[in-house]
Image (cartoon, rainbow, N blue to C red; front, top):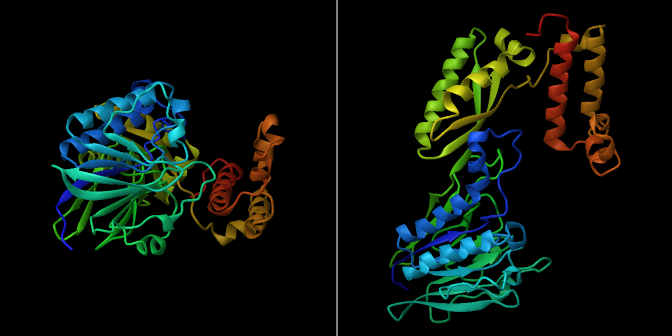
Length: 410
């Protein structure tokens, strides 16, 4: 069945209450950016709906937690909704775990162009253009402990293009069986399409990265539907601060100048590929040779970090380097373990602990007195999975550098 072409914007997990975290330090000239970026990114989402002349905007939950934003969050959203209303753009909002309908403050009136779905049942709205039906929007909000009943969702009985809006963790097969044209799902901070063509189920992800591991662009999704009901979804970046994790491989013969040049070249590439966006980047240097040993043990890493910060971190937009570290080798030479030295004893003991994932790493001695009596003590004793492996590799390399005499290990 054919349909009238339409376009709409899908966003979720704006989390206005949550500025970026996991940053060891933020320079003074970038503090406003870090504090304000959730709001600035959200404002760009609304600007996308206006620029694309969208029929409507769907919000799939976790937009804000009003108790944490204070009055600013609801007032900001009401203002943005009014901007859309002035252009005839409606908003369909399914609350998530942090923004169920009852969390919205009664003192802030929502504009008439905003429909917030009930958390008690699945509701259906008829979206019209020029008085003619264009799409059927079904949705429900969510509150803590509530399970979404997917069986209550259904396609429009008259064959109208149907969009479902919800905040949930769902399996592709369960969604596909309901015959919905487009599932606008929230709750996954990573952008993901569960399936597409001819129907689609999609998480747009967060609009703004919140911590250094959430790398690359984030924003909202523009969904375009043609007359044959084919759906094309496109990421439209809305973030104002973007995280990257970059790895640079060293050749054994490379000098400090060579490494510095490679860093500058990569920074220039990041700036060109991310125009108009401030970038935070963590650098990992991999390889072997004398320069790697100097990076691990000496002051070279700190010196290089200071240099690239001063040369590239104060522009507009800025490329600010969060850290620069040398990655320890995955495997140490077997001969180091055979040494009848303090270093050999240390490496053999560490190898035994690595071989037994249930054996404590004894990190609790590094916790504060207050933390030793809390849940962190158990977590520090037995570190799980990849974190345990990384800590063990770092400890092995640190031990090699500290126990091998004046000269750093190669």
